Amino acid sequence: MKNLRKALAAVIGLSVMAMSVSAFAEVTATGEFTSVNSAVSADYTEIDQNKVSATVDLSKAVTGTEMTYLILNNNVTDSAILAGSIAEGDILYIDQKTLSAGNDTFTGAINLSRVNGYTSGDELPVGSYPIRVGYYYDNAGVETFAIATATMVVAEAGSGETTVTLLWGDLNGDGYATTSDALELVYKNLGSARNVTVKDVEGATIGNVVIGQVIDSLNLLWGDLNGDGYATTSDALELVYKNLGSARNVTVKDADGETIGDVVVGNTIDVTYSE
Image 1: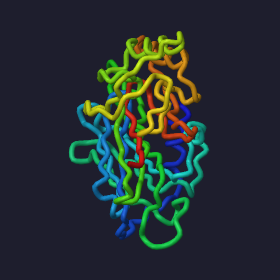
Image 2: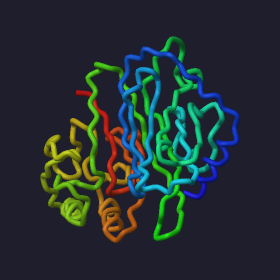
Image 3: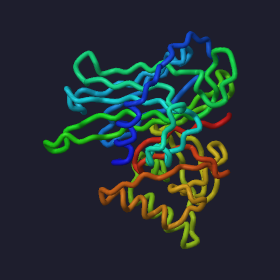
């Protein structure tokens, strides 16, 4: 967190022009924010104009403090962000302002000329784009800096792709990420893997799968919470940490080892798949 805060401060000093591009992009976008107190929400309704909005909840952040909005290129890794090694050319939009009533929303116009994979025309290339919002919140009377993270997943409109939001760590579909989910991993590693129902955060059933096997619709090895390619007791430990109040950030990968994004165990993550 400290390195990322420094990175945000550093890129604010860069001279960056956010080009407002008139577009008629045939794309859709999804990607919810995660943060310590769920203070930031995203709005992709203007993605056809290559615009993305982020709103900071005034009841969850400290007014009068500075907040920062950053949209990054689709080839920027989380490790590069954490290390503060963000190239100027990888900043698609950046802004900073003082949070106040009526001044709690950013609308970022993406600089298409900087997008990795962009060739010509007005269409935003499909891919995953990191978005960060830095803000301050009241932590037991102390103004504390926080980073809300989102991965904007851009897909072609009508491509047959669907995005579902999962509570990461809820393996048995009961709507919570608890030690009961950790037990499913223990059973699996004792040779008694059980069949569970996979559900999204709305409670809609996605399918059934045996812990430790791939759920085909999402192409996820169900139970692999930390992205190491296995469903083991190390994943169960992530749930134990979460329930002890020390939830950790993990990298979510699909069954092919491709990174989907980073999430804190017990928070939500968007997963896009082809129907």
